[in-house]
Length: 463
Image 1 (cartoon, rainbow, N blue to C red):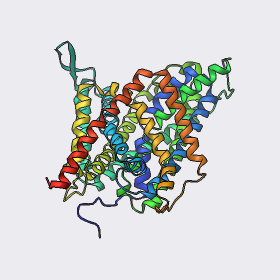
Image 2 (image 1 turned 60 degrees about the vertical axis):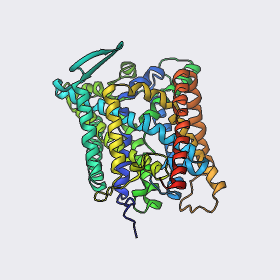
Image 3 (image 1 turned 135 degrees about the horizontal axis):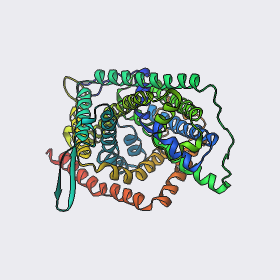
Image 4 (image 1 turned 120 degrees about the vertical axis):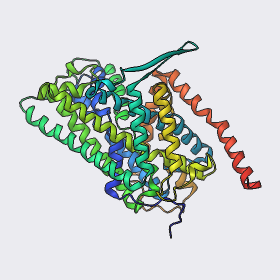
């Protein structure tokens, strides 16, 4: 019988797949292609980058599927790192998530939502400053857009506080609308762009082989950014019905679906615009839509991006608290964070704490720099979690594994090697940000030992 202080498995396959896709499809697909075109001004290479990126994420999904069905607990990656390498590694992952990555993502998505919301209601935009001041030489200003960002973060957190049923239904609706708008964009894009053709030559501008390889590598980073969040469904493994089947299928179906949507969306971009006109254009979706459908399409695309961001924001708010919840259950975070609401059966205090910190980041505007610092450590933990499959097979050979990674050991190795290349490239291109991210993570080491001593004291003296 399920204990009253446990989470309840209420997420089916459809819910889990919508959660996974809803988190991944944010604003990235609408912004990255123009940036990629700067390094590889070739439609064929850009499409190849999206396909290969999707295949690599699929390799990661297949790897995480084994970990998820073997350890179907709340916390996902935190649990895999804890079991494979020890509680310190799990704590550092959770510390980084709470301090920067997840809360920073929520803050960034909240502000991005406010920026697009401001295009419809200019008096609520991030450009409308409420007040500004100087504090010891530090200039601070608060905009109406930031207030909108905090409001939407608090509202969606309240929805998730009130129950998993509310949370999953909102996510399902948002993701279905999101997928529907993307499919409409693709469908009408093919109709209006049927007279155009896509130049599929691998090097349409005569770049050298070295330049193409370098450009392709940088484009790959953009692709990974657009796929960010693919593994977040594992955080709620403790609430997925029949996780042995549904978690694996949600990871695979979600990854394949996102890859297909990304690939087809980029084809529409190339039907609308030549690559030369995309170079450096951040709002490539809006420009392509205007070219295909006319000036009135800009507002529709802004609405589509607004819904897309809202779905990603809600999904992040849903899954994040489960990691802090798992940490608290292990005695490595505030005790209240590990409690389940007696009525709503959600990690309520964990949700509140996340909302508070994310809102503060949104109000201070410091999340962008912190998030940049944490990206290197974030990819590093992807690699460590994927490598945990080898450690756990050796360390816990009798652990039930209803599903074993297809193509083992080659599929996990390909994923690890590819991300290792991204890590090396990031370290070379952005050494200050990368090393700062590691320092930010290392600050969690003394915090871990503080929590560990506190837990031992409670166990020893009961206080």
